[in-house]
Length: 306
Image (tube, rainbow, N blue to C red; front, side):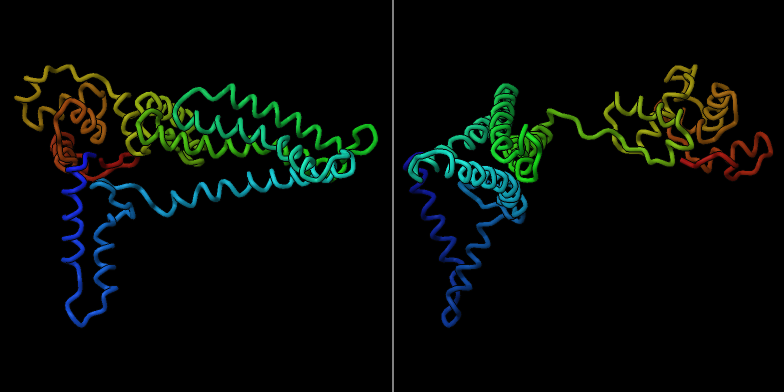
């Protein structure tokens, strides 16, 4: 931003504040709160240079909550290392603290850079594996400090060893969640596939598999759309050119659809015509079928109105 732009923006800010100033006799804090509220967008993002910056409370709290278990396991691991060094390393206390901090911080350092790389959509596998490997070595060391003879497991050995090993793994869980959110927002990964209920899979396993087959390829995750997509894929072709179909009456279109289907199913006929760009009202289709066959102009067993 140039100096002229900043100079031009400052009077506008001052004017906005003075316009919001309360009338004489009213408390000055109310005017300031009104001016401050005008600087915030409805979603909680603060306007900086005319653009909204996301400051939603949930986005601010998530990193803090994610840091709690990482800080916890590293603090426990550090305390265990220091307790062992206090009785086995004849150094002054600052040196013992330095050794414990160094041992427990290397895996954290590698996991941090893996986290940064993953959020930047960069390769993070080698950094992640390095963090896991170093944490495994430190975990084995911490385990050996408190294990029984012949590395017999004890509560302290298992607890301190797991704390050392789990630190980069916990960080990777948070990194993956943040990375997927960013990639999803940019449209670089697909949302979750369609979810069919357990009842559908229990009573209609074959048809549920067909729905999943069609929905996953077309990227459909809405259940109703996935069902409609499967039904449309099972419909036979309508042996009529588009200009010919457009010139037919509704009755003739339905007769042509029933002829292609080989049955007098109103829902399937309506779906077949809709697939070819022709919309037919379901109630009208039942009336036409009644006029042709004398069948009731109502839904029959097994038919579902679209």
